[in-house]
Length: 87
Image 1 (cartoon, one colour):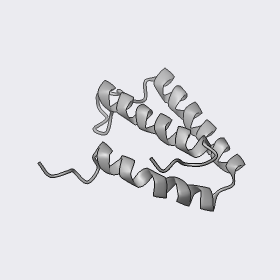
Image 2: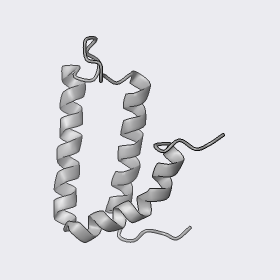
Image 3: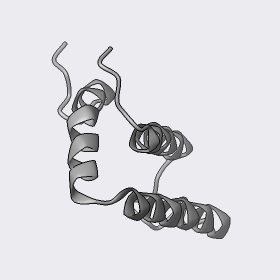
């Protein structure tokens, strides 16, 4: 079965280069501030129910929301690590 262009496997393979590029472009304090803003926005949207409006054709399912949050947590962890491993 062919791999989808936006599959989790493809995303994971691209994370080291993504993290390296983000670190090249932004200072650690800028990255931390942006991650904090993203987390705050996610909490506000979850509290307000912004993810599950019935008339919104782009609304996420519960599974999509969980997948997005898992990806964010993984990328956040990579960005906060002082050095990426080579495993």
